[in-house]
Length: 214
Image 1 (tube, rainbow, N blue to C red):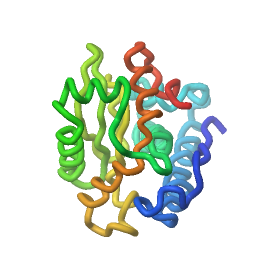
Image 2 (image 1 turned 135 degrees about the vertical axis):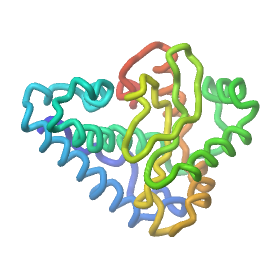
Image 3 (image 1 turned 180 degrees about the horizontal axis):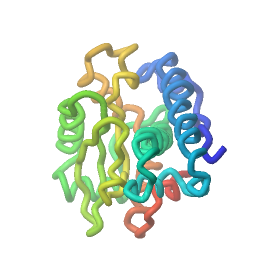
Image 4 (image 1 turned 180 degrees about the vertical axis):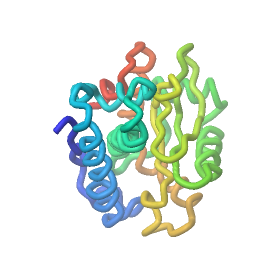
């Protein structure tokens, strides 16, 4: 198999009470697992693509054959997005950012509280399923962007420094339709160390976000 479901870097219950145990089990094992399964199934039709990373596949979707392009976009994107998502959270996380990411947030958004408000507001306003991101541009600047479904900023030539999942499967068991409440609570499990690592990878000019993963 070309791609595998990465294990969670912590226990299913480790992010309680922000993210409940049952949501973590369903989200990781079933949803992320299905994206990996479907991506591998699509690539069976074009074995020459099986050696490519999921990031490379979605970076240049136009080079993916028409008959599997939608499957790669949706499932490859889902695999990349969730592989990042698990790593940029941790037990007893949150708090104020530090290091380089704190500096760029202050430079770009004024202060952390304003950034959190703008980031969460963008997540609330994302219609339907999707993600909200802090993404880096080629010139070194950062911006808040949203993407529908499992699309990733990498397909737009941006570097996904970190993002939050606003699909209902990420929060509905605990928060029901209260997406704003989930977005606010989520800051309490953010792993700033990992996000700093990803930001440093962006600054160093790496094309592959996966190289930033610990």
